Length: 150
Image 1 (cartoon, one colour):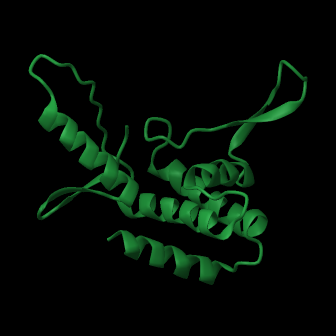
Image 2 (cartoon, helix red, strand yellow; image 1 turned 30 degrees about the vertical axis):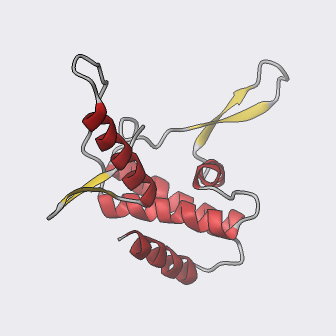
Image 3 (tube, helix red, strand yellow; image 1 turned 90 degrees about the vertical axis):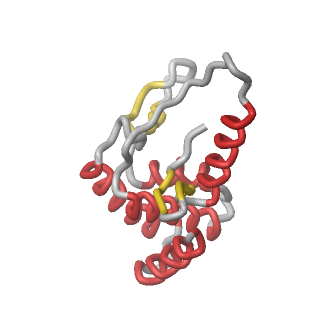
């Protein structure tokens, strides 16, 4: 389980509703662990938090405005494809060229590369996935999504 957390004056909280759910589950797990039980834990300082939220707002925008990609997880696959964020590989079963999607994880991509990806992702969404939506409308709707997470 992974979660993006932000430090607030009252303590840590999830950056999105899904992150908050994951954080709450983790806290409950810690409180109920028996002595001697093992738990694997990793942490990293993330990229720019506001930019991270914009990316997930873009995925939510796609999920809310597309009949094909109704979840942020499905939207991420579509956005990576629309942005050209993949390498073509040969499917050994069929010989067809298929996309091998790149990772946007913190371990694989720093802030500068993430900014380039986000720009290509937004362009791809507006050109391919939601072509009837203009940039100003997309920015306004994503702002509303992020505000709803606060």
